[in-house]
Amino acid sequence: MIIDTHAHVYLEDFDEDADLIIERAATENIDQILLPNIDMTSVERLLGLCDKHPQLYKPMIGLHPCYVKEDYEQQLIQLKTYLNREDLVAIGEIGIDLYWDKTFEKEQILAYRTQIEWSKEKSLPFVIHSRESLDLTISIVEEMQDGRLSGVFHCFNGTVEQAQRIMDVGFYMGIGGVVTFKNAGVDKVVSQLPMEYLVVETDAPYLSPVPFRGSRNEPSYVSKVIDKIAEVKELDRAEVCKLTTENARKLFSI
Ligand SMILES: [Zn+2]
Image (cartoon, rainbow, N blue to C red; front, side, top):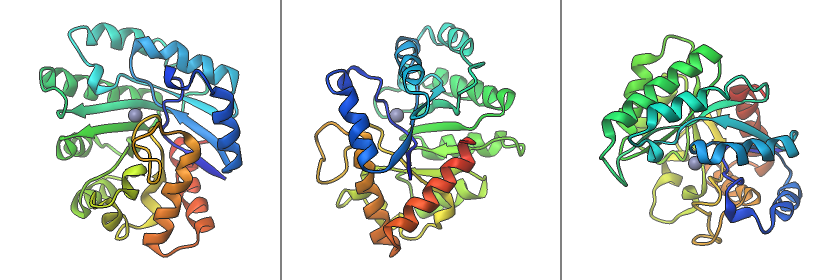
């Protein structure tokens, strides 16, 4: 069994073939798919999908850093009202993205810290998005870690040194399609990491693995990520499935 720990399948990109997505995921032995939220405009669609397929889809609630704008405090107040859902597996996705736009850098950091506090209050892990900000997002976790924080740096593409800091603070790394990209270097870093700290993900509809690079990503393609990890770690595919699924079950209590 496999868990795709990060997929945005509630987006309109999947309206046409929502049932086929589920069928193809089942064919690849994916039995759970975790859905990170984006902002207030996505939350009802996300939760609706989880209500429709409660075994397969599990929700996260959070404000994505690219959507932290002038109204972020209002967004956080509204999003916080959803935190009592029984099936919530994490706060997410949260973090800092300085690649697209630095206008709200200060607000992004504040929103990130506020949502880390939520994870403490609710005893839930959190899922971190970082772009051009990996050292900063790790530093804030290091500073706030009081033994109660757990989570995953999603779409990890850092160095071995950054991976070591993440493991030292007790966090996991989400490995996605980028591990299959030639020249990205993620495969070389992953080859040096212990399996104990890795979970797999797609980030669908983004970042499709080779050979689907450039087209819409979907949960069934997580099998390509597993193939690549098996190759660089020189492990059986079944072993990679087993270990990454165990890690995901432990982290998200599922
Ligand atoms: Zn995402």
